[in-house]
Amino acid sequence: MSTSLIPTQRPLGLFELDAEGTILFSRLEPDGRSGDGGGAELAGHNFYEEVAAFDNADELRRMIKGFLRGGGPADSFDFTCRSGGEAVPLRVLLARVRERSDAGSTAAVILHLRGAR
Image (cartoon, rainbow, N blue to C red; front, top):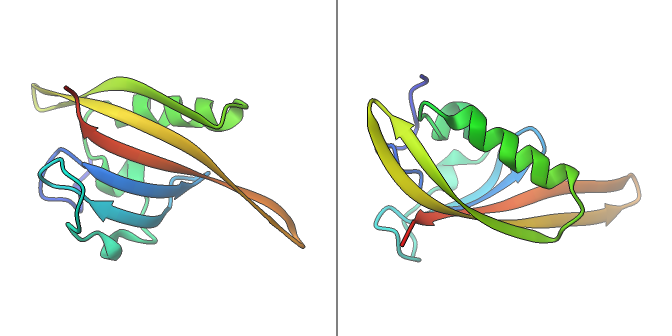
């Protein structure tokens, strides 16, 4: 398991990731509610290796990559983060971002992690 840039094993908040998992934008929601919990310092870091430092982060990565390969504009699912014997249920919301430029199109994903209800 890697060391997280977030002091908790619950990376709650809004993240914009490129196809490799690099954070383009983030807004942390440490208490699980919208608001400015910081997160600008995470830009440029890899979400899966440096933020989502829980034991089953590779499973979340596979699910997000599957979403990017698909054609739908949005998706949501429940996911349980496992870390050191602790299980934390999350709700994962995904939205596709496409940008057209002269060089072609780029794809990113908006990832919103919040506590499951």
